[in-house]
Image 1 (cartoon, helix red, strand yellow):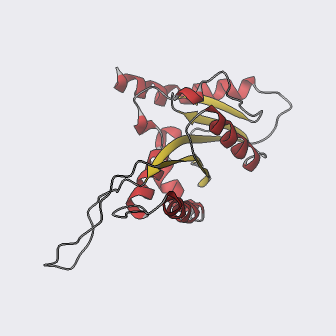
Image 2 (cartoon, one colour; image 1 turned 90 degrees about the vertical axis):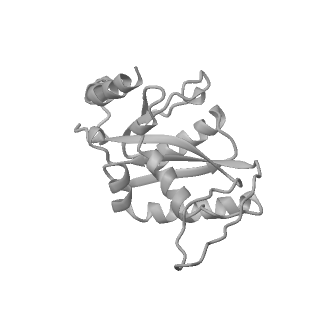
Length: 202
């Protein structure tokens, strides 16, 4: 079942990482890092959340349904507290290839082992995985295994709630603000994402 699959990855992750490291080019001496990647969809549909107001005052927030979206691709290195992200128009293989190129460049001094979910664009024949990245697929229906989910919750809670954006530009501006602040706070990234099962030694 799903719970057993989740436990299975947590138990087998050190073994999977070891297999990948041992299979790489013996001449490759770059430090190994473990990362997690995910895509989050954000748009103009209002995210209604609880908010503070003085006693006796009922807060009013805007509400709208506007089906226009962008996608945030994010990868975190839990141990280093680093995040790489791009805001892209679609969730597909071409966009994933673009994002993997970005991660590969930003972490060119490392050999990256990346945890991803089972989305079709993560297993597409057209996927181009850079030479310094290897992928590990997490079990289906197990978002709790991926720490990037906490990044999405942080963005939705702190930068997007109770706002009615007039355009996607406004959504992107709010997302950029949140992502920049997170990138500047590695200690916060670590506290949100460095799950015990991901603390694998190499």
